[in-house]
Image (cartoon, rainbow, N blue to C red):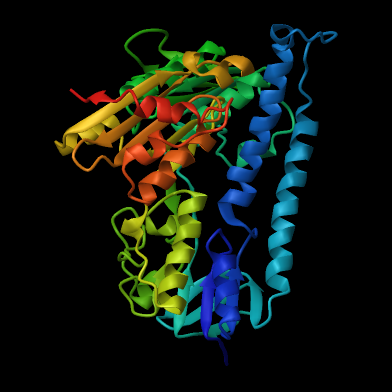
Length: 462
C-alpha cells in the first residue's frame, strides 16, 4: 500500500522548505521527508551556530582590547563556554522551530520523519515512520552533506571532532589542533583562540585557503596568526597517536617540530554528499566519482522527474547556493522562467574577523583567462570606517575586463567585507560597466564608499 503525492522532497535543508511552499501554493500535494534535524547543515551545524560563536568570540576579543578604545574593564576577561553554548543553542532552536512550524502549518504538505530510500524512480520508502511507501511523479533530493573523516594513519585510534561534534563542547579545550586551513578550520581556529584556548592549525598545502589569491591567503594568515594561532603549513604525512590523555598529531613540515600535541583535534578537511544511502541505484540516478548527483544546468538529474538541490549536487556548498537552487527549480517548473545554474556569479564569505567577501573570479583566474584586465586595490589602513572601528587589517581588490568594462571579480578582506561585496556583486549581475558604480554617491563613513574610489584608480593588470 502506498500513498500518492504530486511531489516528494527528501531533506529539509535550505532548498526544501521554500520549494514545498511554492509547490503547495501551486495546488500540489507534497510529502517532505526528514530523517534528523529541520534546517539542515546551515541551521543546525553550520551558519547559524558558528556565526553565533563568532559573535561571542568577537565580544571577548573586543573586551580584551577595551583599553584601546578608552574603556576600562575591571579584571581579566573570561569565557563561560557553557553559557556561550546555551546562547548558541537558543538561537539554533529558534531557527529550527520556525521551520517546523512553517512546514507543519502548510496546507497540502505532510511531513514524514524517517530515512528516505528510493525503491524505484517514482517510489520512496520512509524507514522509521511505519515504513511508508510514497509515490510521486516529481521527486526533489535535498539531502545535504557531511564532514569528511580522512583516512590518515592513526585517525581511528584517537578521539577527533568534526564541525558537528565541536559544537557540543561545554568546556574549553586546553589546546585545539585544527587539521585543515580553509574556511571551516580557520573560522573555528580564531573562535577558540579568542575564547582563550591554545590553537594550532595544521595544513597540508603550503598556504591557507588555497582557492584564494596568494595576497589574500597571506593577509588571512597574518590576521589569524597575529592573534596567536600557530600555523604548521606544508604538513605532509599527517598522522595521529594517543599520548596519555592528549593526542599527538605528527607532521613533516619544512621547519618546526615533527609533532603537535593537543588536548582536542578538529578535522576540517572537506565535506562529502549524503548520497550513499538513498538507494539512488534503484532509481537510476547517476552520481560522479565523489558521490555528487549529476545534474544539468537546471538541476535535473539523469532521470526525468527527479531533481537534486543543495550540497548533494556539487554545484555549491553554501546556504545561498542551495536556496538559489530552489529558486531555479521553481522558476523553471512553475513560472516558465528558464533560469540556470550557469547564470549565477560565484560569491561567498570567509567569516574570520574581519571577514573576507568574494565575488566572481580571482586575480589568478583572470590572468589564466588571457583577457585584458584592469585592477584596483586599497589597503584598509586607508578606509576611514576601518580606522574609526580600530581594525585596519586587510585590503580591497577589484578586477575589471578592460574591453567590456565590466567587473569580473573582487575580494574585500576587512571590516564589513562580507556586506560591502554586495555593491560589486549587484553591478556584476546587472552587467553594467564599472563606471556606473564608480560614479555612484555612497554614504560616508562606510566601507562601501571606498569602492568607487578604488574603481577610479584602476591600472592595467600586468
